[in-house]
Length: 464
Ligand SMILES: Cc1cc2nc3c(=O)[nH]c(=O)nc-3n(C[C@H](O)[C@H](O)[C@H](O)COP(=O)(O)OP(=O)(O)OC[C@H]3O[C@@H](n4cnc5c(N)ncnc54)[C@H](O)[C@@H]3O)c2cc1C
Image 1 (cartoon, rainbow, N blue to C red):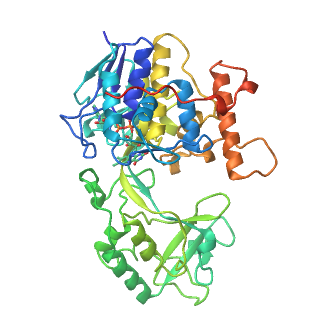
Image 2 (image 1 turned 45 degrees about the vertical axis):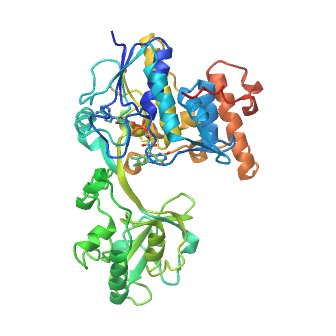
Image 3 (image 1 turned 90 degrees about the vertical axis):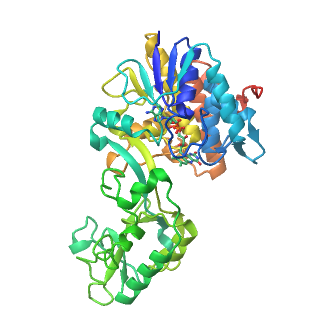
């Protein structure tokens, strides 16, 4: 008899399976590899790391380090496997990826309460389940998830436009304005970079010749236009738009309608608009400029935009396959579906980004599924913990700008201290508060007695 079905034997699904099985549930874990491939995974191991072999910082006062310490307290088995497979990497936790995946696979295969079924699961089960099928969820299952969550609540791609520092914009060339003067702010909501005819054609030429990141088989759809979030229906990289005709950008994201350059009093030939990206107004993104150019090429080509010749980039543009649900509409911070107590989501499909965050949500979903099975209330972690903050963020973010989020101090509630403190000190205080509140929430200790110095890594597992 099966108590819990888990779809996906990746980072989240493997951790979830272990946690639930340890709590006595009979778990059936569906993993479609090797019979059905994702295009990114290379092996049939569970918990295969598809790209980097780094699980982020291990330092206790960094965001990823805080998350790791929380996972140590919560008993993450995948983190133990990672520590057993670790390689020297300074302050980071990097692993021998093959050993890591082998250790996880052995743990899961040998667990008496877990049955691994090597099959693609195409439907969402009607009984207690966790969906942890990842950013490359199979198309058939995606259809089933879309049906449950309504089509518009499932996203397939990340489309990120480059973000630059405001103080690197040359305001002698760029100017503030809203189209037709219809903005919310009197001086205009956007910063506009105006092109002459010659500048525009030189820019398009450079864009077309620039080197691109090679698309993987599961990303080919990008060339035709993809759905990448609420406002990105039919979203295309700028270089692909340019390929469709030399003037297509001037009629698309670079159209100058409703704008006049105050220096000439005339409408520019084309325009790039920059939209404020943070509350402080220190960052701006290039509107509609999602791109797959290589990062050094983005820097070179985007600096040809008049006014951006010295642009400093905080983040480069990206477009890549990433299936995730509209968690702010569909999930609770316990990782349960809003309409079904017995249906959990975990991993990248929730909009939590990064290996550690995916392991962490798997852990919480596994624990909560077990609690539900045992007629206990599922846990909602304090928002001051990194895992609690991630779950809070993905379930409360503004849906219209919802993009995957990884562990960072920006999602934690601010510290109570009114005095200005340095970055490192702040990290330490966030870490202490997180572990104190976690211990308190778990009823482990008196809140005041807990400090992150007390948290030692769990004993390493023996490889093989
Ligand atoms: C190409 C790529 C590179 C990435 N690089 C990094 C990186 O360097 N660092 C980082 O921190 N994060 C990275 N990520 C993001 C993310 O952290 C990883 O994808 C991570 O593995 C996600 O964990 P997960 O458990 O949610 O999904 P996965 O680890 O992908 O696990 C999902 C599993 O579900 C299986 N599956 C899918 N559909 C079905 C089905 N219908 N039935 C049965 N099984 C199914 C898949 O085969 C897979 O094994 C990357 C993502 C991608 C796509």
